[in-house]
Image (cartoon, rainbow, N blue to C red; front, side, top):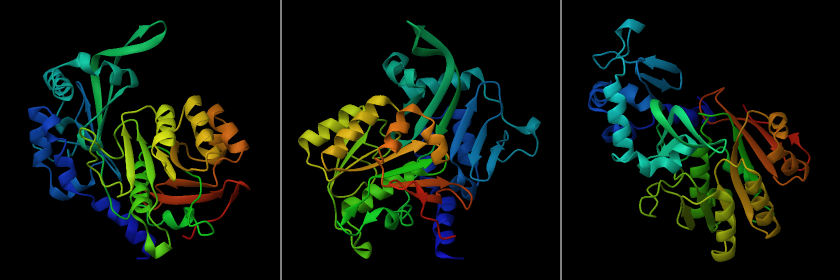
Length: 338
């Protein structure tokens, strides 16, 4: 097993203890089934999918499985536990603290951020106001995405984004489809950049993190519950564009990091950060540079060569595989050691 394969095998091991963090948010029947699961299976769970009237399912790296009424992988569909209306009602009450009104803003985005950086995606009937989604009602499906903190997850990426000439990092974009580990890698990059990586000749840098959805640092009352390094200042729950400007004006960061750029105002804020001489570390959804260039928000960022390194992640050799490294100035592949 080579070094890269060894690193990515760690993604599969994970920690069953992380799954335990979401247990208080599950309806009693579903909680009982999850508790009954084999320990090795618990360590692999990436998502818990709860759909009213449908089988309870878990998403693993190798695919989805249905859970039986005994709390084991179902041998056939008919053996699976079917989620009841009472389960769904209990789930929504637990997720919202029995106050769905308090979550109206989050429901507009289709997800709820949970303690520890976990996230519950929710679907139902959209309530419109002026043609825009105001909230959701008749909630019927929920996907709880399990967040895992994996030390060393970014160790293959970090050397690729260090600028040895200036003793800092390149302006970097992590690009990948969902469930390919970009948020986990981003968190570990922030940790290593903030605390310093002597093995790569990188001193600790002051990092400003805009954690709009509380997924990266997993703050509770403003205090990060995940390790994002000793020199990281976190703006929790703050819109990315506004947060980047706030950090730029008040905290003197050397690096500004954020997750999932997607709006025009985000791109405009990135350009302000760039012009201020601060390094950028961010992520986006996508599977290729060509795909990214088709999106209006990114076409100008690519044309103006905002990013010096574009790291494309996938799952070809496990979650977090570096599929390609693009030089953002020449837009040429730098290649990847397989």
